[in-house]
Every structure is written in C-alpha cells, then in structure tokens.
Amino acid sequence: MRDIIIIGSGPAGFTAAIYAARAQLKPLLIASSVEIGGELMNTTEVENFPGFPEGIMGPELMTKLQAQAERFGTEVVYDDVVELELDGPVKRVKLGNGDEHEAAAIIYATGSAYRKLGLAEEEVLSGHGLSWCATCDGFFFREKTIAVIGGGDSAMEEATFLTRFADKVYVIHRRDTLKASKIMQQRAFDNEKIEFIWNAEIAAIHGTSAVTGVTLRDTVTGEERGLDLDGLFVAIGNDPRTHLVHGKLDLTPEGTIAVEGRSSKTSLPGVFAAGDVIDPHYRQAITAAGTGAAAALDAEHYLAALGNENAAEALLETEFVAVN
Ligand SMILES: Cc1cc2nc3c(=O)[nH]c(=O)nc-3n(C[C@H](O)[C@H](O)[C@H](O)COP(=O)(O)OP(=O)(O)OC[C@H]3O[C@@H](n4cnc5c(N)ncnc54)[C@H](O)[C@@H]3O)c2cc1C
Image (tube, rainbow, N blue to C red; front, side, top):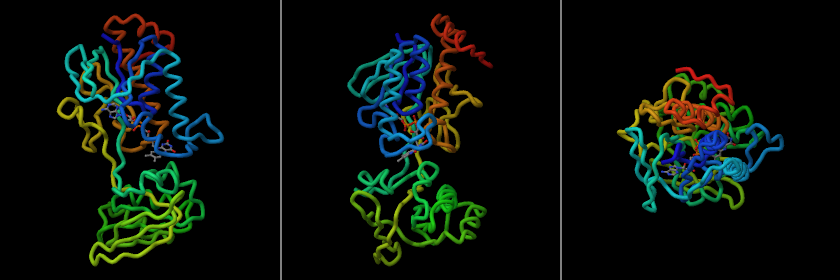
C-alpha cells in the first residue's frame, strides 16, 4: 500500500507531489490519459506565475513542475481514475486500464473545466486571442476591441475588469436580459467602454493564427452578421470535476469539494482536495499550487498521526505546526 496517491496533473497536483516526494512519501500521481499538465496546457504565455519575470509558456511551466516532482521520487502514471473507494483507512483507486492502487491518503486535484462554446475553432485559437480568464489574459488586450460572451455575474465582472485594458468591450448575450445580479449589471451598464449585443450567439470565430472576429447569429431571427474583434473571452460557466466523488464527499452549493476552513481536509478522513476543484473564486495557477502545498502538508500530518515516520520527520523539518 502507498502512503499517498495524488489525482490530477495540474499546478495543484504537481505541487502536492513536490512536497509529498520531498517528505519521502514516494507519491503516485495519476496524470490522466489525455490532459496531462492540466488547463495551462491550453494556453500560450503565462505572465503571472511568480518566478518567471519574462513570462513562461503554459506547457513549459507544467513540464518544469512535473520534472521537479519526479526529481524527488514522484511516480507518474498516464491514465484516468475511473473509480474511487474513499471511506475506511485504505483508499482504493481504480484506473482506466484496470489497475488498482491503494493508499493511506488521497489528494484529489482534478481541477475544473471552463464551459466551451462547442465550436471547432476553439481548440486552435485558445491562447491566441480566445480566452476563458480575464485575470490571466486581460493584460494582452491593451487598447484593443474585444468581446465577452455570457450574461452572468462572472461575464459582467470580466467585462468590467477588461475595460481597464481594452478600448472597447462588447458583451454578447443570447437573451435580452441578464442573469447577473443587479449591482453587477448596473456597473456594466454604467461603463462607457461596454456595449451590449442582445439576443446573439457566436456562430463562428474568425482567424487562423489569432482571433480576428466572429460571426454573430441573432437568436430570434436567425440572421447572421460579422463583428471584427481582437479577442474573445468566454464566460459561460465553469464545472468542477467532481463526478468521481459525488455521494462520497460533501460539496459546496457552488459544486466545488467542501473543505474545512483554509485546510484541504474534505468530509472524509485521509482525503484531501486542492486546486480549482475546491475553488469557486480565484482559479489561478498560483492559488492552485498554494492549495496543493497545503494538501500535501495536511496529508503528511494525517500520516504522521497514523505512525508514518517519514511524514513525522518531514513535518519536523519544515517546522510545520499543525492546527487541529
Ligand atoms: C486557457 C486558459 C488559460 C489560463 N491562463 C492562466 C494564466 O495565465 N495564469 C494563471 O494563473 N491561471 C491561468 N489559467 C487558470 C489555471 O490554468 C488554473 O487555475 C489551474 O490550472 C488550476 O490548476 P489545478 O491543478 O487545480 O487543475 P487543472 O490545471 O485543471 O488540472 C487538473 C488535472 O486533473 C486531471 N484529471 C481530471 N480528472 C481526472 C481523472 N479522473 N483521473 C486522472 N486525472 C484527472 C486533468 O486531466 C488535469 O490534468 C488559465 C486557464 C485556461 C483554461
């Protein structure tokens, strides 16, 4: 039986692995079979991860995190977890290839998925003018004309935030009223850089190497027209990847995994969660990495209490004093 199994290969999973591996806990990290490296594999330049003053490409950052985790003894398996048994002292993890692994502790870091428009161009243009994160990418659109798609609070927040950079921000919404709270709506209505396009959906995104515009389809009449743009932000929702733990772990009203206070402790002993799967608010690489570190330290503390000497020693070395 292993000490720790980590599920997920994003910033949260690999950071948890770096800490757990340095604590001599020889973690097994299940990376997934398709999206190894997590969400940052879908982007180009990351300019807000500390330590890289010139910025770093998303895939390169993830390769470095993996190398750092492996350097200290993390074993990475390129498969998907398909089933979990989490209650009881021995946690069981079943993979797509049929293999089963057991561990005393689990760190669950499966991230969340931004909802997509369902257009073929999305794969090609992601990170090239097409974005799901204003905080991450707004800076690249100084003095540009861009659009935000969506009608909820996050769409209003992103549109308002993006006016700090862009000259013009269209909000494209498929209905003629917004879902967003009144205060967020009013803030957007009052902003002279924002223009609303009602009853419209995106029929196509234009551009080969970067976004140059979209085809808008009127949701009432079906009429289509072109709109020139330098960038497009999709803000139509986000789904934490929790399907494997439904009915096993407590969730929050937002659908993220519920954790105790600022810790990574879930509703089951020995099961810890980190990254975007616990975070309905920030969803940044650095915050995911931070909670990954916390999850490894929480897991070390749990294992030390079970008599694991490596975990106990590692806690002493980091002079970590756990608050229970
Ligand atoms: C296009 C784009 C650009 C972004 N740019 C930035 C940026 O510039 N700066 C920034 O700070 N943030 C950025 N973000 C946000 C950032 O990527 C996320 O906040 C961060 O990756 C979350 O890390 P995570 O480890 O929680 O999850 P993720 O990165 O989503 O990783 C989760 C991993 O778990 C794996 N997984 C899921 N289910 C299973 C399973 N059953 N078995 C095995 N593995 C599984 C997934 O395949 C994935 O590899 C961007 C996001 C997107 C989509």
